[in-house]
Image (tube, rainbow, N blue to C red; front, top):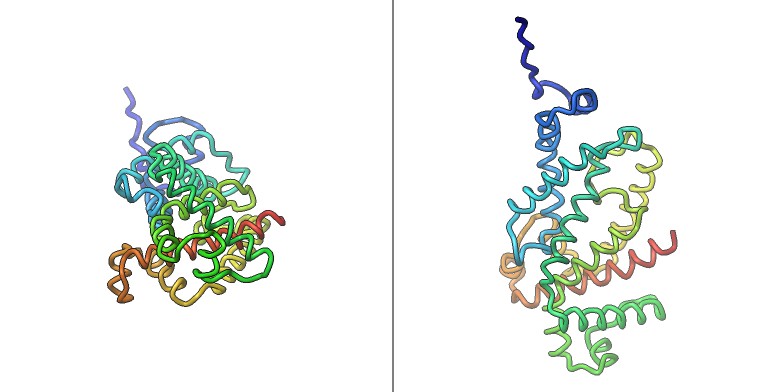
Length: 259
C-alpha cells in the first residue's frame, strides 16, 4: 500500500496555498492561510483599539479575527484583488460589530457627543474653520466645564463614529497603510488619494492634537501614558483626542460624500 507523502504547507507561498485549498478544501490549509495573517489582525486591532479596549483584550480580538479570516478564505475570489485587502475591511467591520453588540457607550454620552460634533460641523461648513471651545460651548448653551467633561467622555464614541464612516464607504477599500496594492493600479491610486487626504486632514489639526494621535495610533500608548508624556491630565488627553477625531470625521465625511 502506497503512502501519501506529507505536504509541507509552511514552505508554500500563500498563492500556492490558495490554489491547493481550491483543489482539496483541506482545513489544515485554510488555517495555515489564516494564521499567516495574524499580524494583519494585530495591526488593525492596534489601530482601532479604542473601540474595544474598555471591554476586551487584544488576544480576544485576534482570536475573533482568525475566525473571520478562516471564513474569508472560503469566500475569497482571487480575481477580485489581494486577500489582505479583501480581509482588512472585514476585520475592521468585525471589531466595530463587537463594539456595537457591547453597547459600551452610554446613551447620554453618545447624544452629547453627537450634538457637539453636529455643532462643530455646522460652524466648519459655514466658516471653513473649527470653532474654539468657548465658541462651541456658547453655541450649545453649555458651560465650558460641562463641554470639556462631555469631550473627555466622548473619546470612545468618536473612535467608533470614525470607524463607521470608513465602513460605510465602499471607496475606502483597505485600512490606511495596510495592504500592498501594487498589483491593482486602480485601487492603489484610490488608496493613495485617500491617504493624501487623510495626511492633509491630520496636518490641519492643532499641534497637541497631532501629538496625541501620533502617540496613540503610531506608538500605541495608552491615554494615561500620553498624559504623562505631555504633562497633562488623562481627561485632558481624552478631550484632545475626541476633538481631533471629530475634526477628522467632519473633514473626511465631507471628502467621501463628494466622491
